[in-house]
Length: 601
Image (cartoon, rainbow, N blue to C red):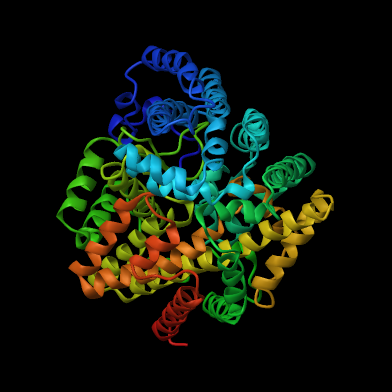
């Protein structure tokens, strides 16, 4: 049973909170570094107009940029995580705003670098590399920058665009405050009849309740709240989309989608192949929904029914300590070094575990070069919590291996591969749990959990990706993104994906407005491509052992040292074809057949 109200942060045991003091012991230490970085921005601007003058100047500018960027990321990570502990804390809001402003100033200061490098010809760059051996480290970055020649404007224009980045990100900031701090949800009655506050963190557990009345009440209560803010939410998202389009056009891209995919050399066909391949196999999703409807013995299946367990009696309480043990054992095939770092992460308080008032919803992995990784969670003592833990640890371990292998220039891995390690961890957790589980009901639950992962990631995130593409296309054609237009677009997609097996309730049209990832344009498709790549990688680790583990460790350690398509291809997955997505769909079908056998249908 959930408590009637959330525990205060001060009531949470220290071991379940992240150790942000390992970054800055006091706010004063953060302020000192903030002032130091402000004072050094002039050093970087001093290289303006000089990068093409000599190999020494080019190397000096790049080296200084990396040094300052490491400090900036440290400042920013600390500020945004302090803010996310309690989004209503005015002091934390102010520090986070200042960190965002400093980031914008740094970007504006460094805006001269890409245009100056792009202005160089390849022969000059090669000559500089011969004159200054230290430039060899920047070989991939220089190559990647030079291919952007058609999309880089003059130094003056790039500086102006960079100065506007904070304004461009304003819609996301407004949405975050509205969504996390200002919106309040109704009180509903739980399965025991107790009045309980509906929150972001509690919504999915309510949706998983065996009590259908609780599921419906939480569904209607949540979306009634979003409906009250419909015009504000639509205007906020429309502003975000317009910002995407503005910056894309300013950099001579044909579309916002091209602007998002081009820097990492992701072909547009990867995006379209994903949507076409998944939507060409919606019969598999419909087959699963039919099984769900029949198994749950429902005359009608509604969208508030799709998260409920097919085998309610197999639902188990999984406290955090149990989840931690399960995850560590599941990831043992990844080798001694991986396990040693993982154990150290738990001991070093990487993780902020439980939901408290004002805490940012959801889960993420953060940190920066030179700090330990950090994970924000809102753990709810269930199997989903264990999977979220495995997922976020995948991100954190990817960061740890990259940061301990690559120089700062390549410390950030591409967004395209950002979900691969996390989803690989989830697959290994499923394999571990099924290998030891003897209880038939629990096996059904585990198989269904895996089916739900594919439904929620491969199918649902592809639907989100289609929504993003269509919303941007509408705006690029000059059409208004009103609440009515966005609702209709979203409802049509939900109908395509879920009907005729599900009764489509009107409230679902507002679901787009509760997806924060839409403010990070063309990000969500990578969850679907990520699960496709992870299915192949995890299968190799399980079946092949050490050779696959070595390839995987190389992938984790590569960071941004090559284009993500190449890194995945070296690991054995070619995302330029439909094959990985088709293989993931085949895995979903195999799981579906297992489930049909387990429940005797």
